[in-house]
Image (cartoon, rainbow, N blue to C red; front, side):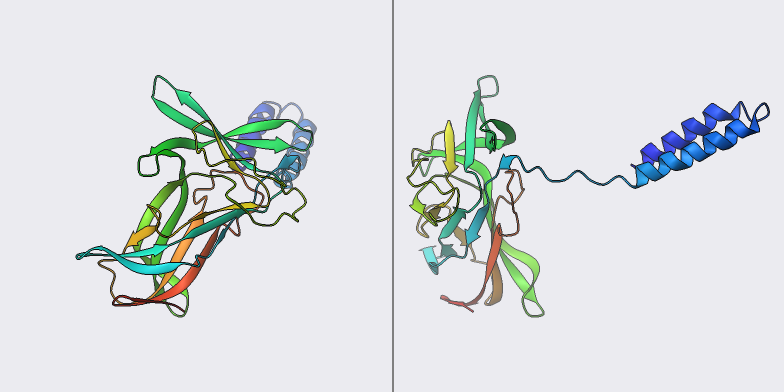
Length: 261
């Protein structure tokens, strides 16, 4: 906006400079007009958020099942379940489009509108998960273990899963009293690259034993840490609220013992 103002002022000044000697009053009038235009530019406010979209509100819930496991004698891991739900005004719906030339399935969020229509938003791609034998939405969730400074402040990442893909579906009910809650399951566990999603009032739980629900902590020293988990970490999916996309637990690791503090 500042650059636009400079260009506007420069153009206006250059456009009037040729009249300075011939008509000083014209210059004064032009200068006053420039000032008034500048006031209009500075006083502009950002547009109001759109209210015509029925957006999802994805919430992640702290794991209830968390433990240390040893897949081999040399590897130490932290396993945990993941629970996320949709408590928004509209479903989370992801549509796939396969590009034959690139051999890639792109993913778009379909957003319903109040008037019954809808619009699409590119969010990434579908990826095939060989261990689960179905398709996932990429970059959907991430888990991190942070060291702690002071009391409960994150200091630095000591271990992470990176951004992970997920299959999204109506696995179980969460709150059917929500205004836009679906009374029955709509998105199934087919987990295809055509359509995935989560209805309002529904949720999905990935059990701790499922492939991917793990962080390697072999080289993590004993101590207290923050286990951080976040859904939609890159904010590719449009939601009505991002404040509940992340949550955390304070944990303590002592050898093979894990304590949630």
